[in-house]
Amino acid sequence: NAGVTQTPKFQVLKTGQSMTLQCAQDMNHEYMSWYRQDPGMGLRLIHYSVGAGITDQGEVPNGYNVSRSTTEDFPLRLLSAAPSQTSVYFCASSYGGKTQYFGPGTRLLVL
Amino acid sequence: AQSVSQHNHHVILSEAASLELGCNYSYGGTVNLFWYVQYPGQHLQLLLKYFSGDPLVKGIKGFEAEFIKSKFSFNLRKPSVQWSDTAEYFCAAHNTDKLIFGTGTRLQVFP
Image (cartoon, helix red, strand yellow):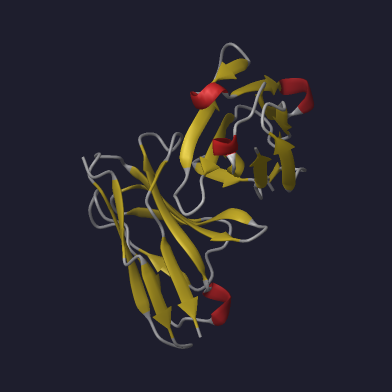
């Protein structure tokens, strides 16, 4: 199993550009989530999904959209990137939403 | 709002010293608790978890944690740290579909 995969590994955007961070898992986990990691602030939950077709907001959802059309994929969309969204983004999946398995992360720089 | 607090932001130890990292959570009711570790340049890995039962849980690499319900605490301990334990440590609590992280503790171990 590949586990949780994320693409791209690194991305540079200009303010106002849009992009989609991809996340996929091959463990048939129904629960998936997105976090951002910033120095001194730990990991903050952006959005999560308890199953295909179901998504909900986390602690810091503003500026991000998600959808969950399949069990395997959970993309995170930035519609209009802002410098405040410069961060490292981690996707995670789990069975039951408890013990989560993390992907390798996407480092995003917004200029 | 539910939250997780880690009061030690940066800990510096010599090899063979004992380690205790504090974690407090603010939840009512049932809560599942976790410690994750992030080695430099890597993604998060699960160290240990507590769901129920024996409040003293043992994890990988000689780490253990004690759940004290009356103190809303889940402190991480290791009797003798090694240089390879240099990493960032995150406490997390799961309640009602959300896994919320503390801000993390950076541990540096010097030979």
